[in-house]
Amino acid sequence: MRLLTHNMLSCNIKGVANGFPLRLEAEKWVEKEVELNADFLRHIFPKIEWKALAGAARAVGYCELPEEADAAMLDSEDFLRRFHHALLEIHVEEGALFCPETGRRFSITKGIPNMLLREDEV
Amino acid sequence: MWFLCVFYHRLLDYRRPEVESLAELFGAFGGDDGGEESPSTRSLEWKLPENHHIDSPFHFVSLPSEEIARSIANRSILVKGFYELWGQGSSYEELEKAIKDFPDERKLPYLTSDSTFRITVDSFGKVISLQEQNERIQGLTYIPFKGRVDLRKPEHRFWLIETDDYGSNNGLPPVVQRTIFFGREVGAADRKLLPTYQLKSRRYLGPTAMDAEMAFLMANQGLAQPGKVVYDPFVGTGSILVAAAHFGAMTMGADIDIRVVRDGRGPNCNVWSNFEQYNLPMPLSLLRADNNLPPWRSGLKEVFDAIICDPPYGVRAGGRKSGGRKLLRGTVGPYTVPEEKRLDHIPSTAPYSLAECMHDLLDLSAKMLVMGGRLVFFFPVVREDGLTNAQFPEHPCFTLIASCEQILSLRYSRYLLTMVKTGAYTEEIKESARRKHLEFKENHLKWLEDGNLHSAVFSPADSQEALGAKSKFDRDSKPKYRGKYV
Image 1 (cartoon, helix red, strand yellow):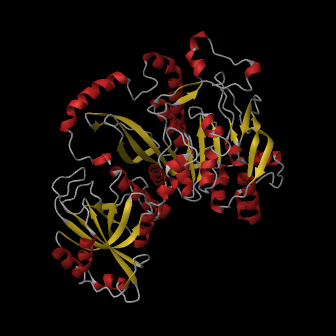
Image 2 (tube, one colour):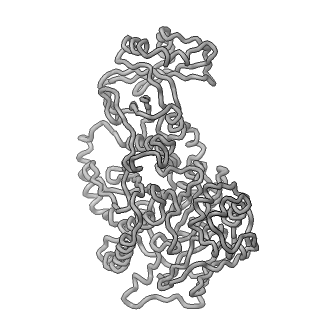
Image 3 (cartoon, one colour):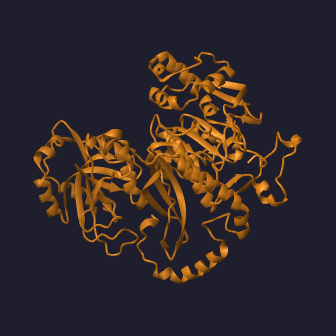
């Protein structure tokens, strides 16, 4: 699971109002190089919850993202590179996501988060 | 600029829509914001040769430039080639006159002495022997070819294509009279990618993997290209996303079945390995999630450029959604998973009706697609008496731009629907979708009892038998022309 995915997911258990961001606990993660596409980054930037991304990046030991970000920063080559790295190049292979409200654990196995709910949660 | 467009004689319904989609992709309508018309009303101008049936492989299409025509042909699956038509006739005499009348300034640049060329003789509906082919080529000496012949890598390729009325139509479209076309090739399809991606060489397959040709067609309908994100909510073994990734799109997939998305058949035989096998970039993400209860955060919208999928509609694999047991035992109180069993608990799932599945897919797509983004999916229909009477799902945010039928059997056929998001996902639409979602949930038990939940479209075997008996009777009266069957 890349941090882009983490940024899109929330806990959708019935009755949960604030299921985002899920707290990331990574046991195993790898970095894989991905070609940088600046157009994609500019396009996706407004959709990203920055604080959640920075927090998730910290959870896997990447602390190079600023606390706050705005669209003007996209002109900086250096910022784009960091944003790209955090968003797409860190793959969490094993670990878990936790609902901030209920603490419900969603496991991540072989890079795939299991977001399926139990029958008593829907 | 008019071109002769020769199609492969396959998937007849899919051919023009594919060219139109690729025309959009390669900017034939003036790019993203250049065009005055909205994306949904953009279409190309087509003509048929005189006396040709719509299912004929020969069409004329108007495109803004040769370059765009070449790009379309090279990426297309069903276009055999685009040609600059130098002449056409119902006899070789007529053809000669037409070619001679074709302006010299359009011909001579391709006939110069320092160029290389080849002429290929092709036919539709019959075989022309090598000797006859040579005679046909010799007969073209009135064209002042100055260049050198190069059969392997010619600079210019010329085609002489013949079609005729051969008496019996033998499953081919009725051709009323002989037509001969001569033209210069502008671009041709690369169907080599089909054997490369054919399913039998795929490492990890499921029972409903999409065949490579159809997957590429779907990716073309979805305008998959670099920098775009394509999502498949029923990813299965990833066959549709593989095609989208081949065209450079970034891909995301989800599936409710963990066996499919995660375990596969071992460490090197799973959805990831299907991408690795072709050296394609890995999907942005794969998730285990339920299309009925998607796990996207509430504020998230307009992130995907295309949603391309083959929803489970119960013929080979029935749909499933979360929450089976609770709903089934609704009357004895909700089922709660005991604390000690929660960690390894495998949630049960409930049947997912086609109607509910379509509602969820359209609602999710309306929310998650960017404006102008495309939703491409298969929709099943029952055929009666050899006819299809299809009612397609509708949504205020979407405009249907193409519906292509593929007949699967006497009884079933499926339509590939291509929709463009043309309306914003407003609060009202969101609210009515929410109400509909709850209505489905409440009535789930009732519909299950009525026996029409599992498959809202397909009725059980008894009606099939009745139809089978009847169709046996009808078989002789079935017209020879197979049309969309090919």
